[in-house]
Image 1 (cartoon, rainbow, N blue to C red):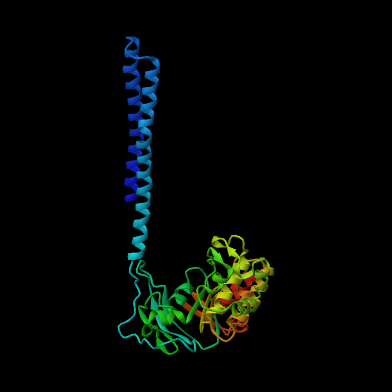
Image 2 (image 1 turned 60 degrees about the vertical axis):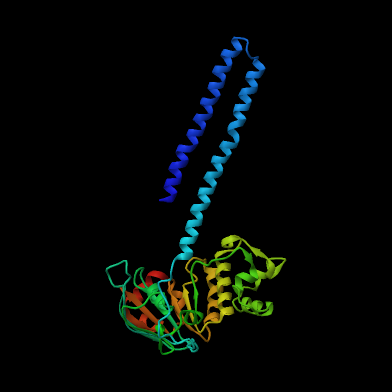
Amino acid sequence: MAVTSEIRAWALLRPAMMMTTAVATALVLFVGYGRAMEGLVTVGILLTFLQYTARLWVPIRNLTEKINVIQVALTAGERIFDVLDTTAKMKDSKDADPTLRVHQGSVEFRDVRFGYASGDDEVLRGVSFEARPGELIALVGDTGAGKSTIVSLISRFYDVDEGAVLVDGADVGDFRLANLRAGVGIIPQDVVVFAGTLRDNVTLGTDVDDAFVMRCLRGVGAESLVARFDDGLDHVLEEAGRTLSAGERQLLSFARGLVANPPILILDEATASVDTETELTIQTALEELTAGRTSIIIAHRLSTIRNADQILVLEQGEIIERGTHDELLAQGGSYGELYERHVG
């Protein structure tokens, strides 16, 4: 509403200023011409008055333009304060244990039912599964099956309607939000790269030395990223990582995961938007990243989850199949059809 009012005001103010300037100039010219014809003033004086009239409106015109800039700034300020004043929907429970931390990384869903407030239909309908410490769980299914909702509930971005989500045997509501989310690392498909040094983009403010940063980069096969630049870790990356390829941005996000070293790792399939050669590099880095920690992967390319300890096939918010890659292929069900469709 504020932006609309500003546009309307500017649409009226600027033409009004131009019209006033034109009328004032015409008035001076009309009166001055009559006086010049009567011999009361010379043509030089008339031209001088015309110049003075034009100069008179310059600061007024500049002032109106500055008012427009100020209004734009105020509108931007309102938006910033709206964001700052927004209260988080999810808050620590009154009974949350401040000493509770994520250590082993086990995850369990017990008959979880959930639906978003903006929709009428349930997104998850009685989902139950268990991920033991160190296991790799893959979530497979069409768009809207509930894969992203499951990983959102682990970090308690939402509260379940029914059932329970347990981490290390404790309900996620028993954790302080900061403690719970400190133990869950999320690597999205669309990697955010900030305008800053390569070092800062890997550590994200974590206080670690350069030797550890290089070890993490080397662990995911991203040491070549440092070698590309003469200033190494001090190289300043552009906003959104415009100078990096999609594969390099993904490897950078993997290195962040090693730096954070969370017991639980959630990945929105990293190889969905890269070529086959880069996929092989990322797959090797993925094995290093998931080793020794509970990992839950939203799988888009089924060829990347052959070694998963458990694959959950979701359809309309329900788990319709579960098992290893070979077990599900042997069943010849929905997973087999999906696999044939993707690989064949």
